Length: 303
Image 1 (spheres, rainbow, N blue to C red):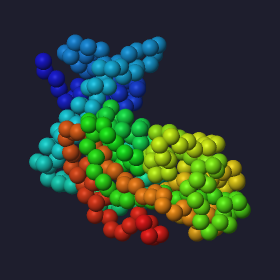
Image 2: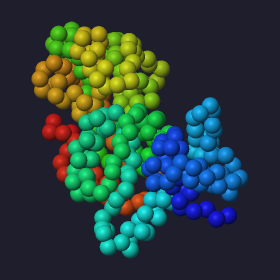
Image 3: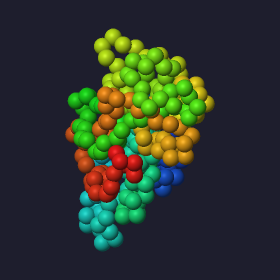
C-alpha cells in the first residue's frame, strides 16, 4: 500500500467541501485529477469513503473514521515541514475549537482575539453547542479542543479544570420574588422555571445543586439558547438560572434581578477537553498555553 499525503489532502478537502470541484480548487488541482486521487485512495484502502446519493458526495462511516486520523497526520506533516523552513517557526494552520454556549459566546471571542494577536498564522474555527454536542464532536475528530461547562465522564476524553464559574438565579424586576430579601429552596422549587435544554452544562449543574432525591422542578419552558432564556424571564414568564457571565450586563442595568438563595451552591468548574491519545499540535499547545496565561478572573463581578 502506497498512500500519499496528496491523496489524503484531496480526501480531506472533499470531506470539508462536500464537492469534488470545490475541493480541487482548494488543493490547486483539476477536478479530474482530484477524482482520480480519491478513486485511487479508495482502491488502495479497499473501501468506499463516501456515499454518492444523486449528485452529492457524503462521508460514510469509513470516511468519518479516516478523517480524524488524516487531520492529525497532515497537521503533523505540516509541522515537520515548518521545522525545516526558514519562513517561520511559529505555529500555523487551522485550529478547531468547540465551546459550550456560555463559554463560546462570552469568553472565547476575547481569548481568540488575544491568541490571534500572538499567533497570526493560525486560523481559528469556533463551533458552539451544548456540552453533549461538544463531546460528540471531539470523539468524531471534528474539533481539536473543547471547552465546556458540564461534566464529562467519558473515558475517551481527557478533561482538566480550566476556570471556575458561578450560576445566578434571576427574575424580572417586577416579578413577585424580586422584592424578597431572601428566597428559600422550597419556594424556588414551586416557581415556574425557564431553563436551558437537557444536555447543557448549565442545566446539569443547576439541577445537581438545587434538587434532592425524588424532587422535581416545575419547568415551564426549555430553550436551546441563552438569549431566549433571558428574554422569557425578562417578560415575566418565570425565573431562570444562567451563568453570571451571560447576564452581568442585564444585572448592572437592572433589567434582571438576582435572587438571594441561601445554602444553594451554584459554583461550577469550566473544563478543557481533548480526545485521549490525540496528538497535540503546536497550534493546540499554543492555544492552551494562551488560555492558561490570560490573567484575571472570568469577569469583574467577584467570581
